[in-house]
Image (cartoon, rainbow, N blue to C red; front, side, top):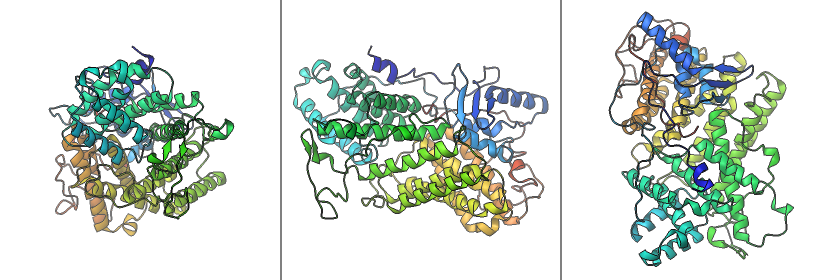
Length: 601
């Protein structure tokens, strides 16, 4: 077996089923914050079990952090796992008192949940017929390539034509190993974009692994192969760890010097490979930055070590081994392209650079300052100015989403949602407690989280687009930020109209309900948000946080978020959200979902 095979596909079954009473609890989580210390998740779970047994109802200060921590990593590791200050786990610690008590448990349901599969179960299959293959590759280059342009479409089309033009008996690994790997992987990723093709995608993915020996060496092609595996993991219920894959791809790029400026070297003899080196590096860096922020871990490479140029903003068809063909763009000047296959991706790369700066300057434990420090506020102001400039200069190729678009990449909606999500990252450290001087910050975060919630509803409800693990992660956390801000500010009804609040929570819940219909493990997050949103509605209606708490039945997907006729039953309690979930689902056993981001770890 090649070294590539050993590294790129880690053990498929290295994750746990939901913890049951009497089983060994998961390993520790080390929370990376100032004065960081180990936070044993297993101890939280044992404490919850003990309290439940002794009281018949109980809660733990680790309840919400433990639950939300499962959004960030998969378990069953021998060593303690590190989740740093930008992770969802760390943010849940900020709001652990508001949201930590007696949250909805995992319902006992049948059928596999995302992450509950025993591993990759597909069997190899022949390549699809030519018409199906063209349909799949067209879907890939239309929907995936604009965001992650690490392949060269004309080169892929050449491989495709050679394989399908050859006689079936001559198509074998010795002659077509490289082509067969890339064809199977591109078709597998594209199959995941469409409904009811997961089993076919898994078979194609398994078939690709049969040809991975052709990619054993450190080369441009091996990095492209790793990134294709990452594309599969982004959308599949099975697949390698995104954290490991992005890091592996980035380290291979660094080892080959792709992070350095081409000006350090002689003019390239092969312009096509020169451009692809820049593309694979910036795609790998962007994935690494996303995973680092998700898990609160260091970047794979500091920005100070990078001086590689962004890829040339030209269409794939304009690049060959001999050079780049001049092309007249929107400005009418040669080389100034208004819209190309790389225009959107370059703007994404610029956003990842801003997010990498946020990761380093705001969340790094070695660089963190008090939020009141002048230097900290200066960082915030500069980052916000750069983010606003990025949003104002959105790609000229940006367009509204079409009904048949299978992803939201290269759309105005994508830019708006990522702008809002980055605002939440920018101000998150300042949401721990309310101060009169932070009115504007809380208002900004309410608007940003509302934009994310409403944006996802427009993107997914009533369309053919498939949900990803990132959908649930971003949506659920945006919903938590929205509710946390409303419970933290003194007069939320002055910031948010009741109808607007109801609309935002309804749209967030609609997407969570839709996700949970296909992914059983999403149900606890749907139920948790429904409970908290309904009680927040009562607080908004009554303008009072001191109403007595009453018990109520578990919510369903049809929870009345407008609170009609339920104001008393869904009332809040003094102390804000720290006791908001008190009394929910008393006397019921706790299950611990750990499903959809197991591949991130």
